[in-house]
Length: 573
Image (cartoon, rainbow, N blue to C red):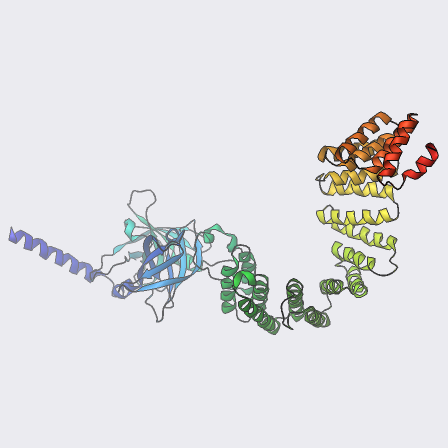
């Protein structure tokens, strides 16, 4: 029995020796590039682990995307047991289940050089597993198929099976160059294995729109910026809508560290810390530090920007916003006066209509309506005139001595025309109604009320119907007036004024019994409503009930109605 055991042991050692002898010379070194990848969730609990391999001495690693889904942190462990944290996701492809990322390393790391050309069918391939054992057990076989993946990259079928634990390990040529990332046989037969082109995985990178891509959003680890600054700036903008104030500040800091000469980063950070300083800071002193940071960032942005006027404009806008919202801030940099001075620098460099719009807003705030009007009209004389610029010109002119109402309406006409069928336009229509009322343009008022109703898609309240009813009343549209006042009552049936108005319409329609019913409903709600007693008297006079009418007039006089004396003199003396 001992002889049999010894024979078996000798055979095993002989086989191991043969395997080691048959291993290419470079493999012992190459195996050090294979690592274990471990991922963790936001609570630092382990999610899973798998294989990966290094392709650069600076810490670039290829592995499987599925390992990282839901991960907030990840590490790699080399064959010596040393761990390195994953710092950034460089690129990923969920369809082919591959990912490229970087780890932080203080020294050069062992790596597998990438094959530079596609591998033909029949070429010998080796699969290198992760192993801490001295004796390495590897797979060897031929490339059986090479099908097109994307562009010039291939997807390979290999002539050896692969266990689950060996997935995502490197597949290399006899020269030691890695050409594939190993994957299992999806059919389950395990007669062969497959490999995604390692060069393809290495080509993956985050693009400008990937900030909205679920492939990347399902990974909580920092993503790399696109290499092109324009694309990176687009990503920065998109990310801003997805992160809270503190996280986005970290993103801005990283963007600036990556692109230290890009004005966009400094401008965005300045705007962000100004807008969200209360969320970022717990004390007034900290908020002040953020404001100081913003001033420094605007200086940096002006230094690197080719459009310095735009930087000064954005700075002026930020200064103005802070100055008007925080009157307790005692800092010469954050005053309306400094906003004006900064904006003048922008205008001196590049006189843009949008700069004049802000200038008009600041002058309007200061009560300098003449200069505000001039600034708004400069905008209106340009190709960039807006609904807002015309509206604010009208509001500024309205505050000037001797303002012509017809000119105000003309400016409002242009504001409404540019606003189109929007809620903004609806607000301007209400402003025009107010001006038309001053001129007793009741027919035009009715048309504007109808336009407003259309612009807000019929979402109006009882007062709207009450006011439109009064305009219709004055142009003699009694049926329309009655319909509107009754709609107002349906929406708000406890308002005495509406019943009194309904009574007035019925009186004009000579429907005196209905008018008296409406009067009574108003008085039930407001017993001391003097005008209703006067209206009751008018109805009773029309019905030739003089005594009752005079009694009603007397009650109106008792309640202080200013218009009833003429009726008493005419009918009751």
